[in-house]
Image (cartoon, rainbow, N blue to C red; front, side, top):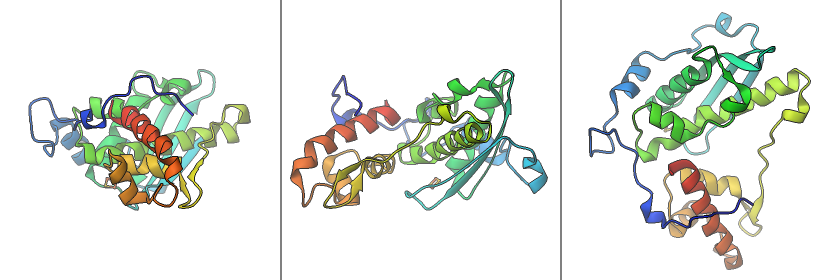
Length: 224
Ligand code: FES
């Protein structure tokens, strides 16, 4: 498991808000622009003919689906185009639209760099996003990684596939590290809040130190 260097108090995690506002529910002009004018959205089947990779994920947080298609320049290993479709909310539309710009602008992003994009990078480009909406931006991010894996599979580069494996943390409640990650993305920041969503450790208190460590890890990963 990844080690955590700085154990910041969880209470230090704050909303990412537009710079000119103290209201965490005010959307930035960039978010609104991408919501009303989404870039690279798939409108008809022909838009995604001859694509090199397809990724699809569903969010347990809200039941929404996200599909991402990528076109890759095989010579340079850069993503030339990213197209997408979602049943997600307005924040998911804006975040995925921005992500599609980030991976295809300036001649395309090398695949290895695209794999390093974090939710925080997307929210920064959007001028902020309410913390309760961070999981919407992770939706596109995860679907993109799934599309890249699909491209690796189809192009005979299986050694590059990155498995997002789950690990059981609590055998009694059958809670995995992904369940804790999703709880944090849905807004849980304390052990009590994560337990309310997952029941982790309630019948198996010996796992609680590891659960607390995972909460810190995912809080820092997504919220800095
Ligand atoms: S995608 Fe589900 S709330 Fe945003």
